[in-house]
Amino acid sequence: MDNILECANLSKIYKNAIALSGVNLQIKKGRIVGLLGPNGSGKTTLIKLANGLLTPTMGDILIDGKPIGVETKKIVSYLPDHNFLTGWMTVNQMIEYFSDFYSDFNPDRADKMLESLGIDRTKKIKTLSKGTKEKVALILVMSREAELYLLDEPIAGVDPATRDYILRTIIANYNENATIIISTHLIADVEQILSDVVFINHGDIVLCDTVDNIRENEGKSVDELFREVFRC
Amino acid sequence: MLKKLYKHEFHSLFRSLLPIWAALIGFAALSRLTFLTDLENDVLDMVRGLSVTAYIFAIIAVFIVGLVIVVMRFYKNLLTHEGYLTFTLPFTPTQHIVCKLVCGAVVIIIDFIIVIGSLLILGAGTEVLGEILDAVKLTITVLPEYLSVGQIALISSEIVLLLLLAPLQSLLMFYAAMALGQQFKNKVGGAAISYICLYAAVQIITSLIMIPIAFVGAGGMEEFNNLINNSVMYLEVFLAFMIVYSALLSAIYFIITRHFLTKKLNLE
Image (cartoon, rainbow over all chains, first blue to last red; front, side, top):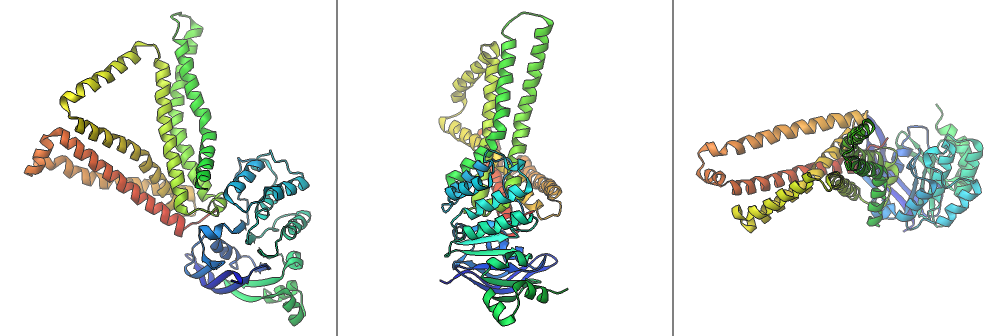
């Protein structure tokens, strides 16, 4: 099986809005994919569906050929677009928590990253600054040796130095057999690390191609093409 | 792996509850100590008064704060930002609900054990405790004169089962209300409205069912007349009915909770 993520006629309709409209998408293994689109385009909905946090209104979504469930959760490492850590726990307790539930969690990798950033492991999550919380969350997510990483807006709302650290962390922990899907609207910052891009708008996939093809065929950077496609 | 889910659940609950339980036992012991001496003076009277007042407040705290902690744990861990992590752990929503339910029910049972333990400390060495123990012994001696061993076994089992079902039913009602409430924009308000609606609906249905049962003897139905003339059998049947009714309500609450957390999850 070459595809890590497959969507077939996937739709999600909320009470008053269509979030995804008949999406057909295949993401191959071993790629770093940018899921790019403006705010409200359906990026987070697609990622939530892949994590089982939402159920599709219609259609199917498969991870490694399996419907979303316990087996897919074992191989997916998910970074939501906001803090998801437990406030009363210390950083050490969060590491223990991840170690207990994810057999692919590598505590040594987490230790090294925490040490390199000088994060005090005995501090409670709620006492950390917003930026430090985001770094701890990323460290936990990237310390798993998962088959699919779903990173929802990992660089939104952080300073440029932290942004660089996050991108370096993603690249440093990238296993060539794993797939990373990064949802963002900050194209210029992530373009350098992407192998494929998926443009999404109003719940529809408008483009799905490799970065090399875009540069060769369009003669533009992904950022330039994005600005053209999504011009207001 | 499932054991670890329970381990973390108990850890989360116990870290808040242990100080309350310790305070209750502490105040019971302090109150008992102040009554060890017959010495009368203003300071000792004040200490006695304060320790007994603190003990009474601690009993109230054990039950009310204990329940609030269990209910809030469900809400925070599943329906707020923490839910993003909880629901992406490799477990099904059903496993999460059952884990929270079992741990919550265990906490409520421990609450009762701790309160009984504190009462024993308070009454240790006093005549009151001796009188209670005598009354229990007397009941155990006298009961076989009126009831057969089978009847005692059946009624005791039914009462134990009802006592075990009671915390499950009340917790599941809170869980169902919270699962329904997250469909509203204001989730806490939605949960409160859902709880009131569920409570009212259950009260109406229970009344509609109980009224015919209470008046069935006056209905001239011979079989039922015979049944209620035999009060022991009536008690057995009534308790059995209550068990089935409680189990049925619990099952309905569980299905509502499971449905909304599986198909209609709406995290912040």
